[in-house]
Image (cartoon, rainbow, N blue to C red):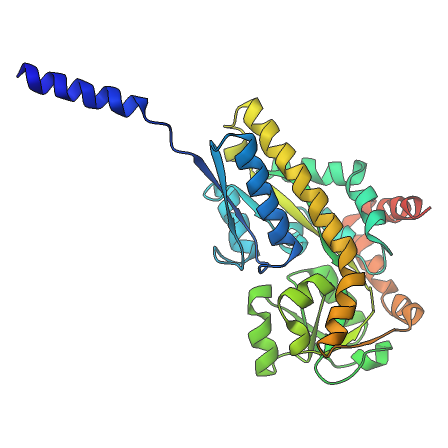
Length: 325
């Protein structure tokens, strides 16, 4: 009996001497490898693992392997997923004021959008998300967007009339294309290539980074430099999970995410210049558009959303104008 007790004690002592297993943090996203979201997620993983001495590791769950944007938002709300780098359309269903950032032709450059996101308006939306169970860790980019078509260039609103176009799950984007005379329909990004191949859509709209990493130019080679709207990628943590972290762990997570945010923005900023040439070499055909005609055709979208959202619409227009100076 004494031997058994001693042996058990030794086993217990050995067990307590073993290092604790690392806490794995899952960050889910719909983007594919090579996309700025995935590259930023990988940097976040490396920086956090290094800073925590391996106590925290990160699983970058890309390519919608853990569900589409709406499913990931539910998982984060419940605390079954720690972080998601999501799309602004589904997040705007939770906090409608976020729709204002997607109004057509609001931003003409990425730095202009960042200044507004990182200022009081972005802070106000972060507060609203916190009240809904989400902690904003960063505002990543989803670029300034272009329109692509399977068989013809898009230069004027008339070229879009009747066009079957896939949009993200964003009502403000659908409103803009309805104002242009198109037939828009939302679809999860992960399902887009198959829908284009089957002929469900004639085209789609995305930033060049998304077009290139998902090879959408192979299906829709005509790319219009429409630059019709900006989208961000809200990086949201589960408040249930976040509130359980120590202050030191929160600081490490935020510091790693700040570096990832900087990389994501740099990659998106450089993408339009660098990727256009690559896309041309791979068969894409670019053209400019009549920007003023597009702006005039979509002006009614502002009226609709100001009636729905109120003062944030004129406020964000004023902030965008100030950031453009």
